[in-house]
Amino acid sequence: MENKLEKRYGLFTAICMVVGIVIGSGVFFKAQTVLQKTEGNMPLGIIAWALGGFIMIACILAFASMAQKYEKVNGVVDYAEATVGPRYGYYLGWFMSIIYYPTLTVILAWLSARYTLVFITSCWPNFPLVIPAAQGGCIIGPECMVLMMVFLVCAYVVNALSPKLAGLVQTSTTVIKLIPLGLMAVVGIIVGLVGPNHMLVSNFATASGNVGSSSTPLLASVCATSFAYEGWVIATSINAELKDAKRNLPKALIIGGLIVIITYISYYIGVAGGASVEVLMADGATQAFVNIFGGLLGNILNLFIAISCVGTMNGLMLGCCRGVYSLAARGDGPNPELFGSVDKKSNMPSNSAIMGLLLCAFWGAYFIFASVLEVWGGVKVFSGTAFESVPFSFDASELPIISLYAMYIPMFINWMRKATDETPVRRYVFPALAILGSLFMVYACLVGHKMENFWYLIVFAVIMFLGGLANRK
Image 1 (cartoon, rainbow, N blue to C red):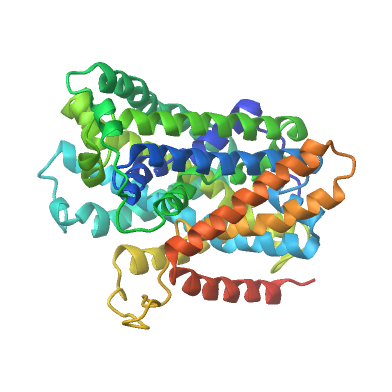
Image 2: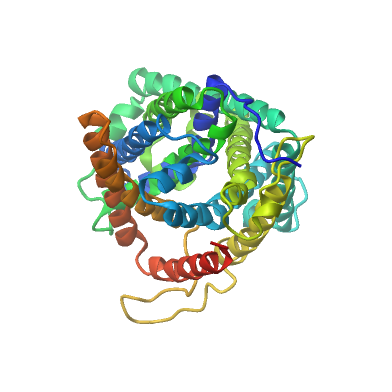
């Protein structure tokens, strides 16, 4: 065992990693969520996607400035350590290793399994499931849970044993997932404008000022886009393995981020050219694909979504495998000698990778019982009041992301204090925009998730307290 990672990734792989990690299932099923939150108000939905993208780019520009100055083991942890201090860097790294990476990874594994089964049952309607597909077997059935675990283990094996293969998987799945998005964006817009029904024009023309029961539809919609836009920060975890990282990482973040924003907004508009907003709100994008490309390609969409989810999950597992290592490399966390070692044959932190898989198993069990099966969903506290809620049940696809945005804010503030050798734009403008965007995300989360925030913060506080106990320093 040794303690140094090989420089193995180039700029193209890094860009594919940014695009591949961010573009996953989010654009497919969160587009439906945004429509539901706005009750079919297409212009408001586009504003929500644009705001979410603006916040992502603002944070990317701020971190790109830091990436040109700091290069150690795990990008965002390096930046926290350099701007705020070693203790803050440790707690940020602990949060990302124990909560952020594994929660998002297991959700993507579940979505990969779900859409794989949807594709299979669409092609073979008589495919036997313990719970029939019509009754939600593709979502809550045992086959989905088993396939979810298979995907997790496969992603772990690829990332822990063959980093170069993991990079190849990331590149290929990125290219594959852009095919249906590009097709729908281009063909959907054209058909929606010149087709006999002029569906796109109709959907925009019927956008109603009444956006439903929610008093803050835009906030709820932007909060929903946070999951679709999240993941770019994980690419900073490979800066120790990226060739000429100070030059290539900022380029990868900015180029990848712009590709994602353009793709998302174009796809969202294109989908509206294939079906009415009422149909899209009820059935999702699949019906738009069926209307434009026919039933065969409509079913193939589910396969593309599954591949897209697998690519994103692979990138997230990359972060899981390196999470505890990034702490141990600094002499922090539990047993740095054990988790900081790098295997000579695979040039990977194998012990850290095993810990990442175990954390995925823990959060996977929580997600299945709390969110998918809703085992304790019937138990409510504070009944009859504004605080009525299910205890310790929260949206693991959004709340960890928003809490990460909150943890960025001290980093941006201290960057403005300390970066005396930077230009005014890089020192003040970029981080100020990032702070505003992060504060907006936090406010949107508080309004959109209400009491879920309370239960999540209890879990967050306990895990961070344990992180303090586990740190030798």
